[in-house]
Length: 298
Image (tube, rainbow, N blue to C red; front, side, top):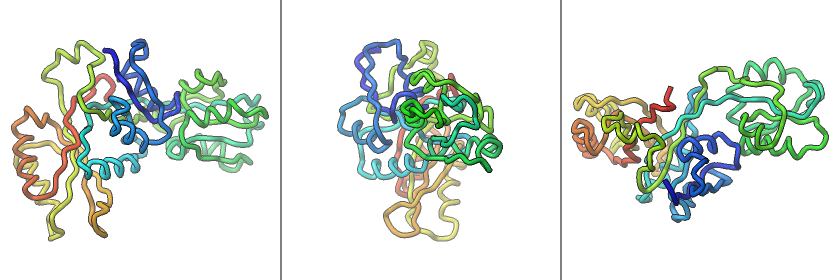
């Protein structure tokens, strides 16, 4: 593997950075990584072909969908962009409290990403609620660690990752404070071609399980319209694994549905025929058909 440029939601030390390292191992010096300030910038720099791949957070097993990513997928794929979802990564999320404070009673402010608070409610209930400590949202868990690193008062802390602790050389006061031990975030790899597999075993496994991701908008809102559309998948024995909705931005109270099914769109006849019939009943856009990443999927 050589000569690949990869954008990801930065800065370095984020969980997205960890997902990037899983997809493109850091010991390959010819892989260049480009941290981006926002998920939107990840899409834009990929579309401008300044990079070959972009890695973005998609959903969390505790908090659910990353809404902004769903909206960006809706908006970019409505433009008939040439990139697609080509792979996925799963990262186990283990939150740590990093601080230079000598004790928790010295901490006056805690930084973290907004989504993190919903994943550490037990810790927050014991160590933040009722204490004179200010919680402050920042753009990423890595940025939270950077702010603590820059603080000279030693009265701030952050909820971040062990990777950030290493990057910013910050002591860990509390480890693994997440409410759910198997808390996991799923990341999407966007690109123009499938990335090289990090495992020779994966390359050899031609029968690997596939996921096909799509979005669709119903042509009408008659009673049972959504059920009729989904029944097409059942009729073709296609296993629907998830469905979510977001406003379509086409007209008021119309929604676009994000759905995923098991199967390879290009080799599985059931999936191929099922989606072909579904396309006759609604406005259908394929986001990608890619291998399930069993190496990290739990």
